[in-house]
Image (cartoon, rainbow over all chains, first blue to last red; front, side):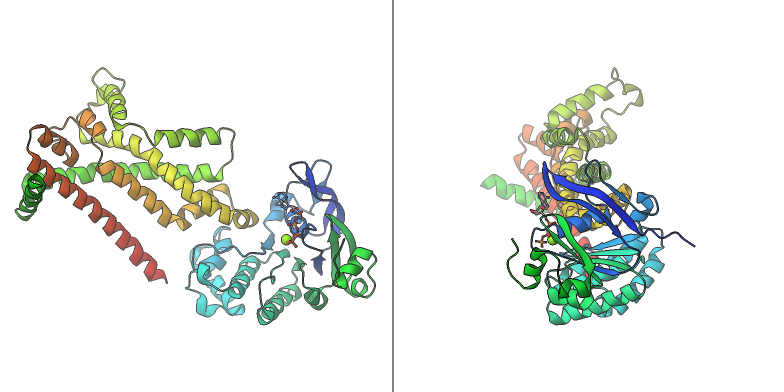
Length: 239
Length: 234
Ligand SMILES: Nc1ncnc2c1ncn2[C@@H]1O[C@H](COP(=O)(O)OP(=O)(O)OP(=O)(O)O)[C@@H](O)[C@H]1O
Ligand SMILES: [Mg+2]
């Protein structure tokens, strides 16, 4: 049995840029299963938090991120879907096949498996199109397929539906839930309270770079502990 | 005006009669510059890419130097290569002076910084786009470079073509290291220079028109080829 990379222990992690503290100190544990939704007003630090957990931000001295296996190996078993999906200048099929090809899978097999994934996300007809001509919704679905193709143990998503309409959002959520049911740990940020209610098992509420609450979703929406979270849920401006 | 017209007519005559000398020096021009462009691209494209991806202490310095070398005066390059290859120079034993190889060496030195610099610009933009994705996917440095080279290949082609444009019209360096020897190292530009010196303006002009035509032809050819490749993929 292969050791899981989770849970992830975070201790006193702080992200600084040019002397300014953007995030933290954060001390928390990312458990080995679940679907967590990160919420908070603009500029709260949602993106920074996800990037920190994914290992894309430098942790200031004194803080640490500890996976169950060495960090180097843990990196290879995670995936990230960015707020603005990054489309490589290749066909949709080759975009999805790319992570396999860079991890030792032959071109032929990588394309075959990518084709299967495109079918799952409903993009088969676009397989031979350049990814850069796809619509916003199609791009996010492609990005999701590309993130999932190597079966990551944990998937980070940064406001993946921010630019999608209702229907595209629903389709995206269905695909995401499928991945979750297949055993992927999900950590996703969103602005959309409706989406959070639909998906979240637990909610992380952050404000001014600090995690103010980490509570099961039902509890969070029924009785938020902090006044900031209450204001946020009520749609008021969070001070 | 008369001379331009005469030159045009002469160019037409040389081409229609398939003038043996013209064919020979045109082919040599192509051979020297295309070889130089190929070598300079093999060095300059990955170098430009590497400079875009890699952060190290003297990066800015290297880029500034490269940009400065782009404006290297060809005569100076010719002179230096001449001294290196001459009988008394460190590489004299190879007997390369006044051969097409010497001309290729000189052109590689002139073209590499140019190609590397343009490639660097193009790849830097692509890297800004791809950065987060490639880091997130845990790619190795070499995979990143290979990916950028491949996905940026159209921009890199432009860099190589710019190198070709500079090389095919270059005369200062190849004149010095090649010597403009008939049947050995004479190319279009050195022949033009020679004929102009002798006062054969119409012949010189004719060669000039052939030179321009050749440059346009190569550019068109390569663009057409790269476009068919792209349209085939859509
Ligand atoms: N590269 C950077 N340099 C300086 N400050 C930055 C940088 N990136 C982010 N910040 C700052 O860090 C804070 C948190 O940014 P972050 O992007 O994490 O917020 P967010 O919660 O994701 O916001 P949004 O909801 O708008 O996406 C902001 O105040 C932002 O201005
Ligand atoms: Mg954000």
